[in-house]
Each structure stands twice: as C-alpha cells, then as structure tokens.
Image 1 (spheres, rainbow, N blue to C red):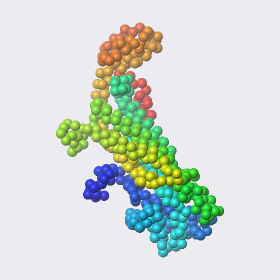
Image 2 (cartoon, rainbow, N blue to C red; image 1 turned 90 degrees about the vertical axis):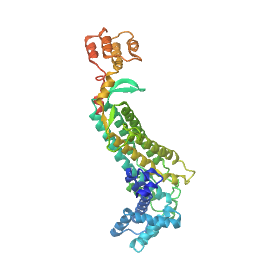
Image 3 (cartoon, rainbow, N blue to C red; image 1 turned 180 degrees about the vertical axis):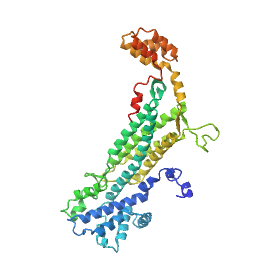
Image 4 (cartoon, helix red, strand yellow; image 1 turned 45 degrees about the horizontal axis):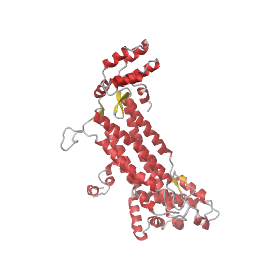
Length: 454
C-alpha cells in the first residue's frame, strides 16, 4: 500500500495501523475470502470425483488431482481480480467463483467435470466454510501474539518474583505482595482464556439450500451425503454441524468472539494496572530518542503504548461483542443480515492484534523503580496491623482487631510505633520475636513462590 493510499484509508487498520497487522490481510481481506472460497469449491469437487456412487463425475487421475489442488492452493491476487470482474456481470460473489473455476479448467481434462463445480451447493455451503477457515487462520495469528505477550509478562514475573510491593485494595495501602506475583496473576488469567480459545473448533455445514441435502438426494439417492460432507469439512480442520437451516447457525463464531473478548478484557485490565503503576512511579519508562511525550511539556514520558492498547481492545470488544450477539439470530431459514456483518470479522481481530503489539512495545520500555517501591513500603507500616492482630487472635488476647483499628485506622504510623506496640504485648517469645522482625517489605507471604508458578 502506497503512502497516498494509506492517507486516503477510511479505517485506521488500512491506514495509520496498516503496518501493525499485515498478517491479517491475507486472512480477512476480500482476496482472503476469495482464496478460501476457491479452496472449498475445489475440495468439494475432488470429493465428488472420489465418490463411487457419483459415476458421472469421473475419478481423477494423479495428474488431474495435482492440477486441481494447484488451483485450490495457488490463488493469486490476479485470480481474485478476475473473480471480481466476473461478479460485475453476475452480481453474485459465489456464482462468480463457480464461473471463474470453469474458466480455469476449460481446455483441460478437468473440463469434463465442470458441471460438478458447486454441485448441489447453496452459496452458504461455500461461504460458511470459507468464513470458518478465515477464523481458524486468524485465530492462529492472534494466538501466536497472545502467547508472546503472556510469555513476556511471565518472564517479568519470574524476574521480579522477590521484589516487594505495597498492594492497593480500593486504591488504599494493603498487605504487601511482590511485583512478580501480581504479574503472574495476569499471566494465569491470560493463559486460562487462551486455553478456552484453543478448545474451540469452528463448525461448518455443507448440506444444501435448507440443510437437508434435498438436491443431493434428487440426483444421487444412494450416496451417503452426510458422510461425504463430513469428510470434506474435517479435511479442512473444521467440524460438521449436522442440523442447520440454509446457514450454519454462527453459534461457534459467537463462542469464539466471546472467548477472544474475555482474553482481551484481561489484557485491558493489565494495561490499566501497569498504567497506574507507572503513574505511581513503581515503573519508569525508558526514553526513546526523538520521541515527544507532549507538544508543550518537554519533560513528559507518557505511557502511550498501554493507552493505545486499552483503546484498541475496547474497539475490538465492541465489534466482536455486537457480532456475537447478532450473528446467531436469523429469520426463519435465513436472512441476509449476517452477510454484511461477517465482512467485518477482521476488524475485531485487527484491533486485538494491534493492542497486543502495543502492550508488548510498552513492556519493552519499562524499568522497575525499586527505590520508589521500597519508600512506599516504608511509609506504610500500618499494613502490619493485619499480622499483629492475627497473632493476637491466635493466643487468645481480647479485642485484637479493635485495638489495632484504634492504633492504625485512617492514620500513618512509623516502624517505632508498631514495634513499641508489639513489645508491650504479652505474647509468647517466639511470636513476639517474629513480629518484631517483620517489616512491610518482608510481609509478603508466599508471593515469591506463587510468582514462579508461571
């Protein structure tokens, strides 16, 4: 794409952000759809030729099979352009595919099977399979990026497993944790949602105009059309949906979009937390030569990558959320509202991929500010009210919670205040010694161990 074309793009995916998600062009573009339609049509024709009951569709010779598979896998951009040229006459995109393939086999030994191209198919047999293949391939692109960002966060979790950090619940100082353990939480959440995405295999159908194999049986009543259909579907890495109307119900697409949205929501939550830690000074950001943080304030180094990620994840979830709610709804045996909606599948995927790469870029700029972390811990000795009152409970002292509440609630206390309080308690020697050694930076429980689980 030229600079002028990018400048004229309506969507940022094909303009400003075009260089950030190039892999998805081959999947979700019009070319990507045409290429997969041709693959489905050729796979169906090959299966018909192999079916003994369909005698008029002669078995392929090895050379013919090779030639057909070359057509199926070798769709060039010029071929897609020819399909679009044919469509100007047909005003029907799938029929244009059929006519294109008949052109391709004309004058070859495959021409004798040309009327078995698109045999007994409705357009939706080809479309639903093609859309499922697009989603399968788009999912593979996303999953690679998802694993990359989860792996990066996991490496940071292990690196910072021991580094203590003041936790904040409700935005207020809370029991300490470690930087690594909090990062590990994000990793565990991302991986859990990624496993749900992996579990999904896209459903597909190839059963005719209203899902009953009506035309198929009118021509070859003795053929096992359900089995033949299943073999074609499964050969392309999909699973058969036996009960459909004219369209595959799109429930599988909704499940995939919902799963991606959940993963996106976890990353968005992570983006906001890191943004907050940057604003608190827990993380510093490496400067990039030539970058400008503010057009008027020269000192600023803004956490723009996490902000960009958050915004793009919001757009992705809005698009996929709408599609997940809309696509499973179709009037009676079908209406056309799914067709225009499905053409936007790549939008949600594109903004998700851009968001992931923005987060990765932001993570690459982060530096831990251990001095600030330590200072915050040392300024909040009141968080030790929890362990002190817990030990007091253990030994049966009266009103431990209330006594610590009176000492600490709504006020900052010093190390000396807390240690004087502990020293005055009638505690067993071992318990008192352990509490006197405790500090906010050492009161982290199993955080280090937990951080290393990822």
